[in-house]
Amino acid sequence: LLGYYNKYLFDTAITWTTDGANAGTVNFRKGKFYSTNVNGVLLSNEGYANKTVAEILNRIAWKYVSKVGNPKLMNNVMADIQIWVPSIQEQNKIGEFLNRIDDTIDLHQRELDALKETKKAFLQKMFV
Image (cartoon, rainbow, N blue to C red; front, side):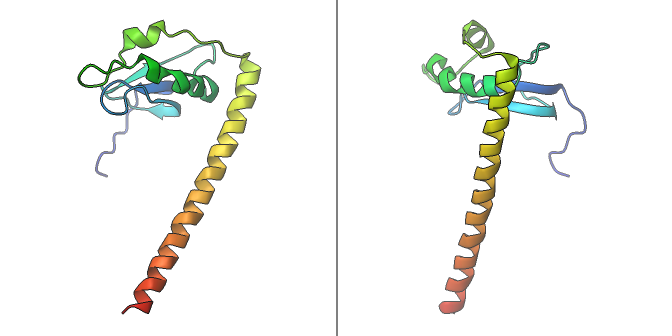
């Protein structure tokens, strides 16, 4: 498999893009993953590396991106960002809710893609 790597560096964390046009984009990564040098990784032994905290950070991290030359959001800047978060129990409930919404969006996107392919096939048959 091209690009397959069977080792991992991290297990469940929050990551963000440090360089380029997407600098400051924050995501929650559930499970084992390998990380490159163009993203930062936030780890938590207390359960704060979760979907809710990632979404909160994603809403504000862009404000801290340096836009001089190539956009950047480096580790030292991310470490200084302070946010208020609800209790871990509330974070888990919010995260579950957000995951259900994401799943619904994915389902509708797949349905939309299938309809676009159907339309394409009909158009090909009509104009052959």
